[in-house]
Image (cartoon, rainbow, N blue to C red; front, side, top):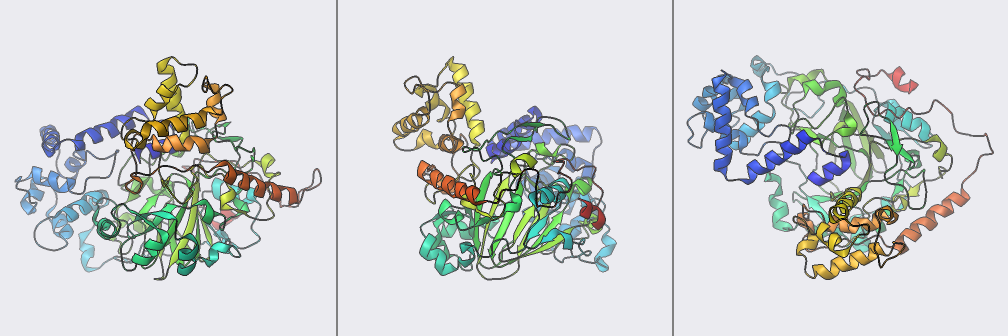
Length: 631
């Protein structure tokens, strides 16, 4: 996960690396080391007279690196008191915290603060500082009700599209420049994926291996994994086996969609025209400058928006997400069922939110958000006495029905809830926030009809077997590592020795898998076949001649963080030349049949071009309907 977040945001800052390294070192040691570090912090803080919530803030050793360990806040409260392994009111008061706050967060009224209660309080302590407990007897509107019950959502009629959708120019300007979610009604209607019933999935795609997660996210602890660990200890099952055993269990498919299934899912053409020539340079300062695109298309389809990852979701019964943001633009297409989406713009309310990890969302430099983050709350029963600042926050609500696709702006806080108990299937994909609209390349795009998702050159494509490529090292980062290895060895051409060293660091699959030497040799020969002289090996200039889909194999199997639980003993299966040729032939046929406008003519409405805005701290709060229509 650490490598994945790095690949999506570029180089880590030195302070972020130090925080992450300190966190890993501290919590990989024995508890005695943790206690020693906290004791020193307590001593230093008390010397300066720091107490109460300010003291707790100073003892938050996790902030800026990760969310707290589940039992961490309880341990700190215990260390501030009697140090007997329990936290009662006397321990709480010893920390200088208000008595009535202890009573409120002691939810089971046993006069003790257990691990869950302490964790819940710690993750909500910023708004809790100023909560008004006189409201307990007269709760505010929406208290202990679903997220958003405190007020009506913002108007959203202009965020809902029905076919024919607008030209990509208009969509990118309004939703990427304007930072607004959208729903594309009926985007999947008429596509084979709309027929993916339980029986159909079992019959046609039952052989596909999928990664599993708990249906109800419980970020901060592993309590949601009991059913999953019992039914699938490796967090992996074939689709047919999953559908056979999943009923009434807290687990669902959150995996990579295989090519065989992606051929039956539409990629709406309104989302094309993300340039493969240029992208925003996240290393520049906002409002950012352009740079050469880092992921050019192998067949020079410069209008084909680069898909970074494409996912498959399958579940029945109740599912929900936490209140979080993702670092990328996201598109979620529902193939069966109904969902409610809640959206809140963090650029409006960053100062009012307590982030779980902290220092990940960068309001003034969002292309360099350091990681994903979330706000700790129960989206089914929001405590508006504690989370009182939410009451003044505006939000959008969109309902997604079978066949609809939702567009989710990058870094926008959102929460999604399944509204029915039946089988629900969805496909989703993400593309980098640096992606920009390009009018010139859009003139070449086949906009008359949608392409299948499989025709898009997703960075990590999946065959349905082998390693499930979700969250592994970006091949570009891997290539940088290869170059460093060559430089360290003083090589002008990549040797097998250097390649083997690069792919066997840390907990890499290729370090421990049976027959690793032969496997490394085979991968090396595959990439070296692209060299002008394979006997010499690849020069540094020739490294980029190897398609990224080929580099994806050593990038994943050589990821020093090691495999996901679902991938132990697995190897990544490359999207081979035959599959890539199939994709090319499909796209070329659509290009050949598209309608070409005469020179100087364009039958699409020609409004102002997108400015490719990617920083939103100065947007009005919130924009009115008229402002959105102007976009």
